[in-house]
Image (cartoon, rainbow, N blue to C red):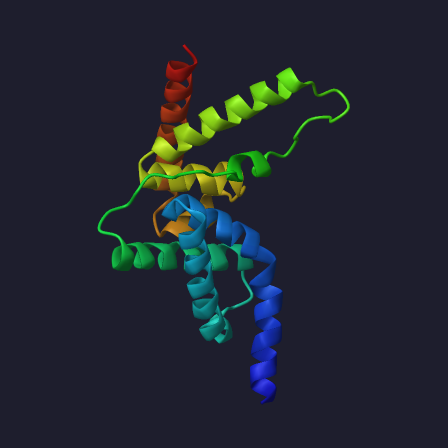
Length: 178
């Protein structure tokens, strides 16, 4: 009985602080809220079952790795192919500096929303490996090594995907701005 309580406490300490990031990543991978919620729920079950094996390293990376793997397992079971991202609000909420509300005008708000929507659409249009890398780096703030662990690829691959993904984003935003 005491062991189960230890696992519950450890789960709360290790996993629960990262549920927001888990949901955001799942949403970018699955493309919608309901599927992301299913993925995060399944990932939490997986994390709880394996919490004894967590070695007190980087909890965020550990949780996001479980979420990523769970998402792709879920997609293989529930969809024949990966789909594009729809109706996301994550980019706006992830902005570090939303602006000073005292100086915002209706026009500046509209421009910011249009820019966020354009960026969101450009990210959604990226191929999955580039999209994941950009989201993990630029939205979640993971470093190259952490992304490599989450995605199960070498650091050089992360760097390449990030550069190529950002290049595609810039090209797409320039194209749609014209």
